[in-house]
Picture (cartoon, rainbow, N blue to C red):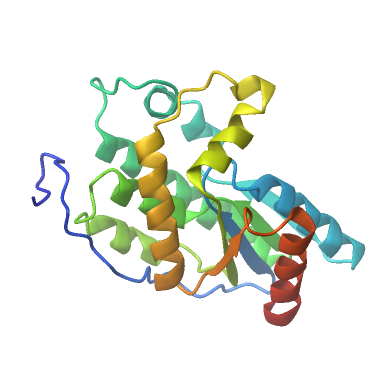
Amino acid sequence: MKCGMDGKRTNKRERRRLEMFRNPGAGKLITFCGLDGCGKTTQIHRLARYLESRGMPVFLTRQPTDFVRESDIFRNYMDSPEHGEFDYRALSLLCASDRVQHSQRVIARKLEEGAVVISDRYFYSCLANLRARGYSQDAWIYEVARFIPKPDLAFFLDVDVETAVRRVRARAEERDRYIDIPLQHRLRAEYLAISAENGGVLISTAAEDEEQCFRRIRREVERRV
């Protein structure tokens, strides 16, 4: 089944590398992507403390920004199983626009100042969600990527869906949060594919404990950044 302009799902997947532009600044860009509950926040803050202890300026950020996260269309897709009022392609375009603005006006400036920018989620997450929801033939997202700086190091933290959901449910504020389980399985598959397609560093946070994961992250940062 092919995907047309009506947004129907397709079984045929677009498999392309995202052609982002080269980091123009003196700083370095490190990104973390993966399912909610994969351990991103823990590892991001450990890495930030480590880099700061070595005298490096660190700037923490996340995508999409609060401008999108607080919008009605985003909250509808995050908090409810009913999406009849909204079109997912419209949400994806909103998120992509937000990422271009944020990357050009916030991240790029920090890189020019020489900071190590660590982003919780990045453009890869936009692509993963679009493909996981059946819009794998939407070529526009690859064109938008040309206006996004390429990370110097892109981490993809992998965890099985059951573990990820259990970790999310353990948070008091998210105990009753709506989670689309089949979507989480598709998202995981897309993250694995996108990491392989785009030279990401894949780390299993279920197979290794927190300390082992951080040691791997630290080695990659020391070697490549």
